[in-house]
Length: 196
Image (cartoon, rainbow, N blue to C red; front, side):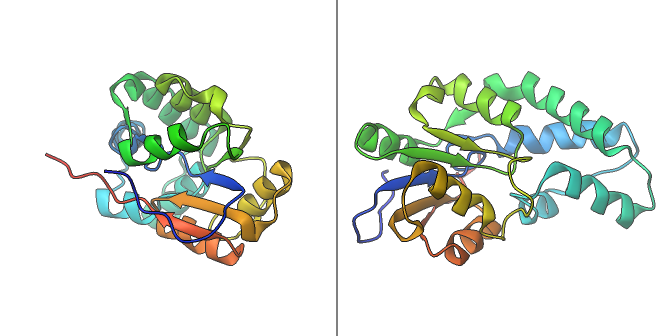
């Protein structure tokens, strides 16, 4: 199924990565569960999806506050990333989004705008063999204010040299849709894949 696009002439496509281009949310949740379990903590699936798009450091800090823990943010983040990399070969692309990437590649520039690290994004796109299709990557550490703030999307538009109003955002998370709207960009909501 190809996702319907809103009306308009769009001069750039901006994509979230996890859950949008790559059906990797189950792998991320498993990696979180294993990394946090080493510290006697958990991240329930409903909260994991509610926090989709948030930076890893913010999630660890919030879990520390909620559970009275002192998990070291960098160590937990590195462990979660290592576990995710092990699970990455089991992730697949999101067919409806990959169709748009195939159809529009070469006609409009593409950017990835993600709350994940550059290492994670490049590994995910590389696993699908599509890393070379993206003109720019805007990842955690490239901007100060995460989604739902529009900063990351506005930065991607500036790097591509396209006005925000001419950008179309593909997103699976509420925070990302809110960020796109705040940036003055049209968006396509990517539905969560049906499981089992």
